[in-house]
Image 1 (tube, rainbow, N blue to C red):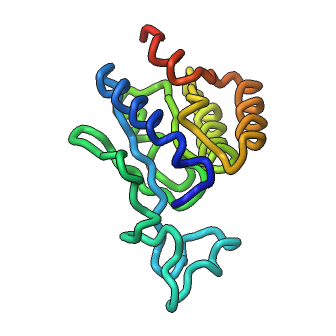
Image 2: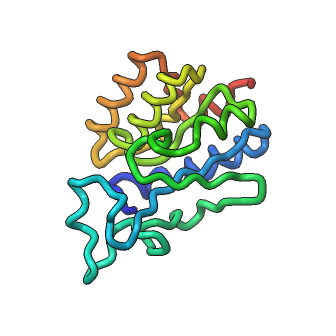
Image 3: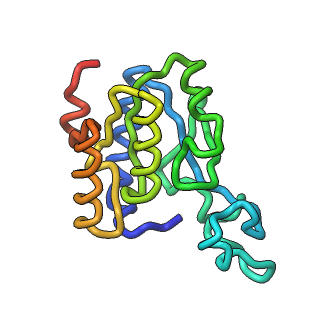
Length: 170
């Protein structure tokens, strides 16, 4: 789904994913897909899904697809979610646990919604460390993004730039 500020971070998301693959890090693509009538969407968004008009993230529509340049490859995992958090009403936690994952690196959009909710849930599930790459995440405005990054730092989330993260030894 189109988010202001999202297009600008795509090159950094691509580089973060490529670096993660080179390091042998499991890639989990989290996508939002909804029923064509929006029966599984938040109540405040239901008006966007009607019999006459496809909703913005209806399964199979353009808004539910990854943007150009982001590609799910063999060995990656795709998780479909219907809420802000990738953990809410999904099997993400059990999938990560069964694959030996105990730390997370998060990229994407939108910082005050999907990123924030997923990261807070990751912290609540005791993943450590949780890292948000600040220039591979975005919000509608820089002020909104920065305010949310500030909050994430206050709960112990690492917030490096892509360059800093790429230079770290794992």
